[in-house]
Image 1 (cartoon, helix red, strand yellow):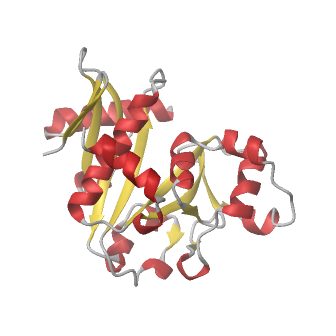
Image 2: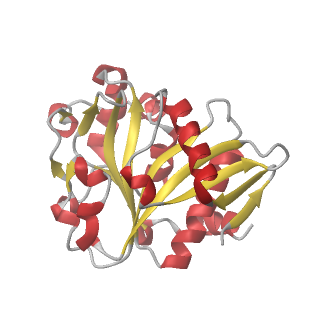
Length: 243
């Protein structure tokens, strides 16, 4: 059973309906929705990050384990992306979803501990790829033009693994911005924190963003092959995971 601490925070697996309800309530607050729950909640395991002193929930995410890419059609992401290119992936995968931090949770130890917990789970399960959807708040593409230009220039999925288009409303940023010079500083600043974390250790994204008007977000399919994480970063993550 996962139990990992760093500073004033504790990461643990959710147990029972009360924990799930707390995670859903935090997600609704973080994402600005009236409620946040779907059929995938019952299929996933949920990780909670709590303030040890108060017991307050400050972060959470959920995990869907797949034995290989053969089951990727069951994932949340498969609703929005054509993932046929990943169906032949022959090793264990984890889909990371609904990752959020409390709107007032600005302590970087929260995100560090979440990554440490994820690292421990990856090592225990032999997972070789993480994937999911990374969300930008709002649906106005121009707000994140520099971020998408940077993604197009430096962080696209390898062609043989690249997701295809499935959603009806998408922004094909790799096609639209391929001739635009990126501004790395501004582009990096516009990235969601979780996406920055993925990219910093070798992650990649789809060549288009899905416009999700129901949630009020733009999101890109994001994946990280564990073998591509730089050794120094892997060592640092495992140092937290060993907590």
